[in-house]
Length: 442
Image (cartoon, rainbow, N blue to C red; front, side):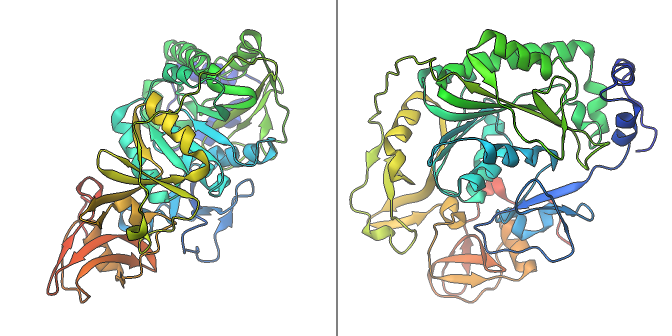
């Protein structure tokens, strides 16, 4: 990547900005690091010798970029490949005075890196609503959260303004706003060709609209975490200052080390010339406790509560759970948030509710893939696969495999991958078609 060209206006901006300088340009022409975050509730440990990321638990730099598609553990949700700078979110969340069981919204959530991080931070407490306005990306978000396996998550496919129907609802809102993507220049040189001064202006205006659209859904005293993957003041410091002028809120001072405080001491940057990251900006606003508006909270009744759940005991842990039925599909959701989930379901376009268990047919469960990957799955009939078998399973293929008749949970290194239905001398591969590996396996 050495000596890759930058857009002339971007290069001029950076060179004339004493906060950034030519050191940033040089760093953007070096290879981007590869980093992952482990799922602490999946039975998987990384080999020794990898460098830990100091600002995020269970996070490591890899020595080189593997072909993630050819690792069954990647498909099983044992880890997530995420840019190290954006993992600063965990450091921020740990410093906020949140309730014991907070309700958090990740507004611009696809493909799911920050949502899986928030889910791990919550550790099965509280409730996470992950939203993506673009439907195709919302499906990817649903897939990645299903693989992560936490049952206290909801995925919606709604416009930010739709959240005005949920006033004073969230304790914390995370907005990783669509931006001009300057932080992507290190990993993706093609992003440089998409940059322009006009696009920076467009993004800054869009970011303002997004925050204003969703602001009423933040409870009084709640926190809004604003982030981008860009370096300019328009989308970062200037926008944060504008929010404080337009909204009843204050900037929250935090410890952002080892990152660099921004130009106005309102937030912080992950700059690739200072920390081994791509590029990231973050700041936190707290809504005034006095900015209360009455909420019209009325739980919806479109979801049927399933009372007889004895047939599920062999499949999943149902303690402190409510089992709901929607369109003949069963879902497990946290009991403490049943009313809130009903309201969310009534007000938003929903892609995922808690853990999708499957369909009940004549008192028997036809299990869903999400149940196989759930951290609450307790199904005892399991078959361990070799790596070669696991990859062919993930391609949707069948092969010789001994086992008892009926549903079997197939695993790799004791981490569940999905379901098969064993027929005695053969089996039906139940791995979802839309999730299957399409690349060639040598």
